[in-house]
Amino acid sequence: MLFHLIFMSLVCSGLSVESYGRDFITAFPENTVYYNPQESYNTLQITAFYNDTLVEITINYTKVFHDKLRSGQTKIVHFPKYNEQFQFTNFPLFARVNSTQKIVVLWLSQRGSSVQSNVVQPVTNLGKWYSIPFINYNQMMASLYNMSDQLAPDSWRYNSFRLIIINAENSDNLITVQSISPDGPKAFNITLRPYKLYQFQTNGSEIQLDSSGKVAVLLTHPCVETAGCDCNMVLSHVLPRNLWGDTFLVPSVKNLNTAWLQVTNTTEVRLKGVNIKTQQFNSSELIPFPELKSASQLISSTNKVSIRLISPGFVLELIPETMFAACYLVQMNSTEEICVA
Ligand SMILES: *[C@@H]1O[C@H](CO)[C@@H](O)[C@H](O)[C@H]1NC(C)=O
Ligand SMILES: *[C@@H]1O[C@H](CO)[C@@H](O)[C@H](O)[C@H]1NC(C)=O
Ligand SMILES: *[C@@H]1O[C@H](CO)[C@@H](O)[C@H](O)[C@H]1NC(C)=O
Ligand SMILES: *[C@@H]1O[C@H](CO)[C@@H](O)[C@H](O)[C@H]1NC(C)=O
Ligand SMILES: *[C@@H]1O[C@H](CO)[C@@H](O)[C@H](O)[C@H]1NC(C)=O
Ligand SMILES: *[C@@H]1O[C@H](CO)[C@@H](O)[C@H](O)[C@H]1NC(C)=O
Ligand SMILES: *[C@@H]1O[C@H](CO)[C@@H](O)[C@H](O)[C@H]1NC(C)=O
Ligand SMILES: *[C@@H]1O[C@H](CO)[C@@H](O)[C@H](O)[C@H]1NC(C)=O
Ligand SMILES: *[C@@H]1O[C@H](CO)[C@@H](O)[C@H](O)[C@H]1NC(C)=O
Image (cartoon, rainbow, N blue to C red; front, top):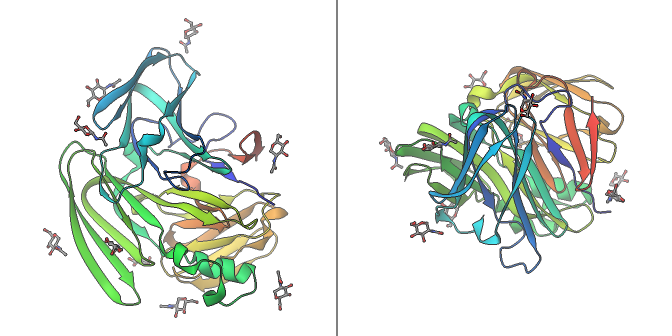
């Protein structure tokens, strides 16, 4: 059965302490395929905390939104289909949001049944050093269908996860991209003009990014297979290394039958909750994570890591405990919202 999990780091009572700010940068990656005739729905939902908050959105250096928001007011701003970022290399369709006071920005993209949503991290939460592991989506689908990796449906497709890098600063930025694949390491440099964006395919390799200034990094795939043989867009705003943590809370998710964890860096991970496991993992390994249906899980690790929760149809970057206050808001499909303590 088709099912979407939209997971946000918004909390019930108030909002995640760290996820608001006055300056944000993001983009709308391709959802399914850009020439899909179905209506696309790309929005940013902006919520203000204070009265008289002036908010501005620019796309390709052109102001497309300018409005004053009241305390608690949310504006949903729709973006046309041509703002989707399907080209590789440089393309200027980044979306920059800035405001005179603190706001929260929620990102949502939907085309047909393919839905994704994310909380956009403010520029203050971005960094210069990112490590993006290879997501062995193929191995996950193969184990789900009891097949060998080679027989899994559409193996080639899952090597085509994409990265979008956006220069978050008003100055040129030199970025060194190092990819580590079975063929050995490879590196190339990119120079990004202020707020420019660069998209490339990861080709099944692990990526390390080093940049001279702050960048936003989006890990995305236009269409990964879901358990119901449908397809869903994946988008994950990657956390920089300075925001890695050693304690993560994953809420119980009733509809989630199968999930895996992926942990960057070799580390010892402890899963508390239903049972306790301590094990050594490395970043290319997918760790089966079956107990989410019955209880929320506390994950702790011996060193600072970033952790993704992966299931057919989504890749979710977990927010370390240091970054949130109370609970997550879990949206099971596009119309129903559930708040999990
Ligand atoms: C915001 O403005 C409204 C209407 O002018 C007022 O009722 C409200 O108290 C103000 N809120 C704050 C937090 O100042
Ligand atoms: C971005 O803006 C520049 C200059 O205003 C324009 O030449 C270019 O066509 C725009 N690009 C897109 C993709 O809209
Ligand atoms: C947004 O940033 C631009 C340029 O950096 C600045 O001119 C503008 O005043 C800012 N807008 C708001 C609402 O802060
Ligand atoms: C996969 O194989 C295992 C062990 O052989 C079996 O217990 C399980 O039911 C199988 N799952 C599916 C979906 O066929
Ligand atoms: C990238 O730039 C750095 C700093 O300028 C330089 O040391 C390095 O050799 C460059 N790497 C490549 C692959 O061009
Ligand atoms: C993946 O392959 C494409 C096409 O050959 C290339 O443009 C891109 O730079 C490669 N990505 C990496 C991380 O090497
Ligand atoms: C992995 O963790 C070890 C121990 O904390 C640390 O020394 C190393 O720099 C980390 N490597 C990466 C790539 O983060
Ligand atoms: C990482 O895990 C994979 C899969 O379990 C294994 O094949 C590989 O040898 C491990 N690498 C290291 C460096 O431990
Ligand atoms: C989505 O939510 C609506 C409204 O609550 C419900 O009627 C529908 O069955 C849900 N769909 C799925 C796939 O859970």
